[in-house]
Every structure is written in C-alpha cells, then in structure tokens.
Image (cartoon, rainbow, N blue to C red; front, side):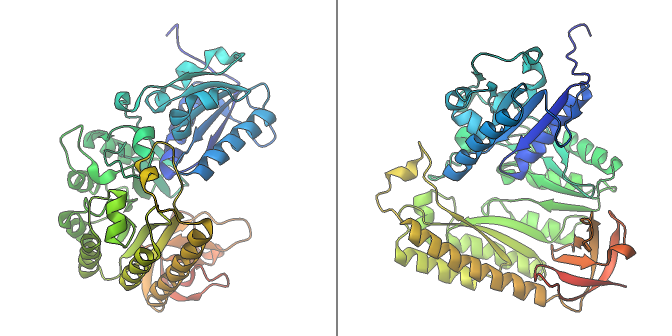
Length: 438
C-alpha cells in the first residue's frame, strides 16, 4: 500500500513498567514495529524510537515512570519518544510536558503506536492523544512470549469494580474482552512458535465475556482443547468470580494447572467494606476450602494490602489471624498508597508509614513460613518440571504443575522439555527444591 508506514533500518527500544499485562502489550507493539522494518536496539545502540509503557498503581510507580522517562530521553536524545500505559492515560499533560517526550497515547490508542510516529520527526513540545475513561473501548490483543517456554495471553482488559483505593478502572476503562475464537487461535499460534505454557492475563479476567456474551468457563474449556499447549495458568481472579464450576474444571482438565492467584486485599470484613470489595472474607475462605478439597496440592497465592485508610490496629490483628488460619501458599503484600481521585481519600483514619512497614513485615514473615511448609510437604515426591532457560553458569530451573520452583543439573536437561524429577531438599538460596532426574 502507498501509505504503508515503514521503519526500515531504524532501531527501536522498548521499556515496560508494571504488570505482566503491560509486558504482554509491549511485546505486541514491538512486533508491530519490527514487522514494519525496525529492529530491536541492542545494548549501547542509540534508538530512533523509544516506546515506554507505564504503570500507575502506586505513587512509587508514578515516580519510577517519571524517572524512567527522563533517563530514556537522556540516553536517546534524538529518539522519537512515545509514552503509553496507565500513567500516560491518567496524567497525559504532566507526561507530555516532560522535555523530550513527543507523544502520549492513552489506553484507547495503545494499539496504534506505528500510526502515530510522525515520520520520527521530533516535536518542539509533546502532545497527548487520550480519551476519557468511559470512551476507552478498544481491546488491544496481545499474546507475548515471556520466554521460550511461557507466553502471556491477554484475554480481558478494564475493570468495572471501582474499589475505593484503586485507579485501574480510570486508567484502563470498562471491562471488555476478545472473543474465544480469536484467543484459541492465538494459543494455537503460540504453540506453533514453541510455547509450552500460557498464562491467562487480564485486569479482571473472571469478568470475561461482557462484550461477547461468553464466559470465563467457556474460555477455559476451549483453550484446553489446544493440544500443543501443555500448561495453562490463571494469573489472578477475583474470589467472587472464581466459581465452583471453574475450580472443578481446573481439577479435571488436561492442561490447567492446580495454581491459583486470588486477591484477598484484607482479612478484615470491616476493611473489605471500606475498600468496596464485593465479597466478605467467609466467601474467600470457602473458595480456598473448595480448591483444597478438589486439589489438595494446589498452590494458592494471595494479594494483601496493608495500611489501607481505616485499618485500625484491631482490624489488622483480626485480618492477620484470619490469614494465618488460611491454607494458602504465598502472600503478595502491598502497602496502601494514596491515589488522587480515589474514594479512599475520604476515609479519615490514616495509618503511619511506620505501621505500614511493621504490618507488611509481619505478613511477609507469615508468607515465608507458609511457602516453606508447602515446599517441605513436597520433598520426596515425583513431579514434572517444565525446564526454563538457565542463566550462564547457573543450574537449570523450572516449575512443577503446582508452581514449586525446582533446580536441576543443566547438563542433563534441555530448555522447554518437561522432565520427570524427584523433589529433594532446598537449594542453598532456600528458594527452590533440588530435583533429581528419574
């Protein structure tokens, strides 16, 4: 076509901050630019175009985004600088005013980076192309290669939940999704490219189907038929959307692994109410119990926020006791961060930074105890490990179906193979079990 945009011979650099979904989307943008003739800039090479995909989940994330943009502009002074992602969507004017930034693309424009490169001619002042939250409608498909063994398949975007502490719905827009047929085709393509495992990713994946009249269970059933993919993992799913039918399906499926990541956020019903979460802790406990009944060895990761406004000492102690009694494997602990425009700012009681740190440390110590006990329970058992690329001079490693990290003698296994091993003691670092080939 006469108007086809070409980047032949141009060097492109890509920078991603934040979640796995951002990394997946960046990978898709990179593929588009490479298909147009660009090559990925190698270390030390000055880029002609830089794409920065940002995050805004916390105040720290905002600061890291600003620092990254300044550094990338400094390192590539002649490059055309494109900023996209959540921070760009929420603060387009602030980002466009950063010297060296040429264009800010909001979430609805994330899939059109190539069309907005302006012939790579630098602008005197950055411009922004964003729409309001209610007008974010595009679903940008993405199935990215995390490494040779694992792909990340974006199935859903946006969120309609509006928890009081969270800016994601404002940054990502309303819940929307791809069709099952298109996702199955992307999974098949990943298998053809050598992928053995797919992580199903999204902002609120249990909400899948709002735009296509399908369901998350329908999606899982369809993906399970793609024989070239040996393993699927569900990235994160709300407890009220993790149905008993989905749990039972995973327990009996061909390729869905006994591995769940479920955001609890607080073990106190009083704090859950302040957060406007859509469940009480009893629902969460029932889901954990259902999983363990169906899959006793299932890995269950849990997100927890400490120091939310309104979290009194009594509420935290109540939450700690509840979490301590849960049969879960690992806690992902986050300190509450004030986000402009969120309803949580109207809650009067504030937790000091020192209290947040102390509570975070207590939960991290609890997490270590739970994870270690989970690993110890698997010593002496046989397991199948999907081998990943080892770092130079390091043992090969991989994960069992239920996400126990295993180290294996690199000389005896090959990347991307599934090895049968017997699980032994902890490695020296204490973060993996030593696997002996059977």
